[in-house]
Image (cartoon, rainbow, N blue to C red; front, side, top):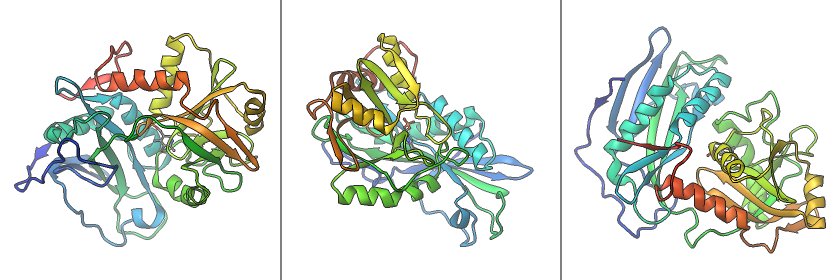
Length: 355
Ligand SMILES: *Cc1c(COP(=O)(O)O)cnc(C)c1O
């Protein structure tokens, strides 16, 4: 792919070692943009200074939410190499989302090349403090000036970058999770498996409710019976029950996390039995009561592995183990982050050098 590069003449001050970066507030010097026009395909790939974009108020994305996004990270290794983690999986998933949303396919190599080229140009923005990374946000928006309900004929594919701090500033720490028994996020046949803004818009109200009750995240139940476990806000969920690793199967309403897939592979390689199946909330409450619910953790790009210390479902508040970090949870976190930051062997071939 030919990418036209226009470098900024006014580079911003980059974050320094020790700066508190938080998440999603700071953006780098450049962005990648590419247009789609029906009949012409994807064209005019370019890297430009990060800046506002101009869209008509009638641009379709504002009205009917035809958009897709992805999320991945670049990591700085000890020798200053910059790595991505399984970016081909993001490219594949982007197209699964695109298909569901009637957005034209982006060739996988184009997607990965765009990410690599942009990260390479802004490589000095990849932070180096322990646990930090450069968050990468590719997204597509529908740009036709039209208020009719139909797939747009023009789109923008944009990639922006945001240096982000360690998810756990004072080390891995367990979170409390609210199992939502009223609102639902997605149903089979809907777009739960796609990474798209609409799913998040649907989730905000329960997130506010959970926060108000002192919980950090929502765990969704299935949209029909509200009986089966689906996933957490932006994470998939896993349980260790009686020695086995158990996680909800990908059923169409759950986002197929790349971290989820990676953790399943690692667990299997370590000899654990892994069950991808329906998990009812009643089974969890029962397992918590009889002491077989040994560990609970979430998986997602942001936190990698997030230990869950407490689960609330209606009147039951379940403390997992001793409320601390499970042994397997910690091992999985160490293994995956070790691979991502280039500190451990990568027997799976997941780490990808940017250049
Ligand atoms: C992105 C996302 C995840 C996690 O996916 P990863 O590829 O592991 O980052 C899980 N659930 C939802 C709803 C998501 O949007």
